[in-house]
Image 1 (cartoon, rainbow, N blue to C red):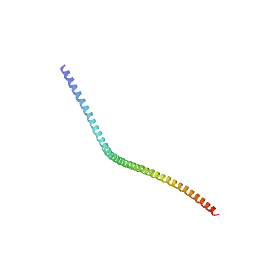
Image 2 (image 1 turned 120 degrees about the horizontal axis):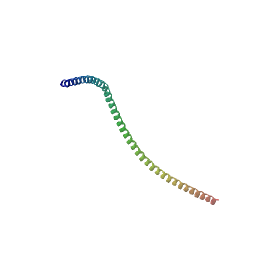
Image 3 (image 1 turned 135 degrees about the vertical axis):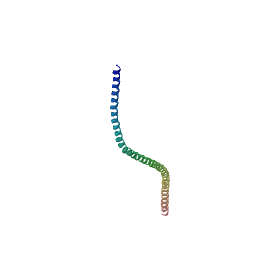
Image 4 (image 1 turned 90 degrees about the horizontal axis):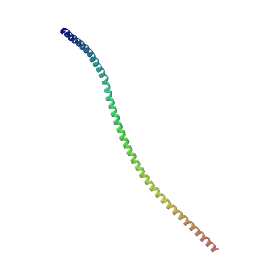
Length: 138
């Protein structure tokens, strides 16, 4: 019985060694494939990283340009605001001048009407006196 037991232990040990050797061979193949995968991935990642860095630089330049444009738009907006305020002030001045011109025009019309009435009355009186004198002379 001892011999059978010892034979089973030896048989188990040999089976374990064989399984261990098979697993090691498989593991060696897997490690080899893993190394190849890492090499291939490394080769494809390097150009991708270089392109990604270029893209980041382009993106940085683009955002810098957008910031410059935004600053220009702000400056333009401020200029438009200034022009708007100037136009508002000019409009107010034009309104005042137009009111003054309207007042002067009204005053001129009133003076012209007064002069017209005065000339009419003066001519009527002159003609009346002239006719009266002419009648008195006859």
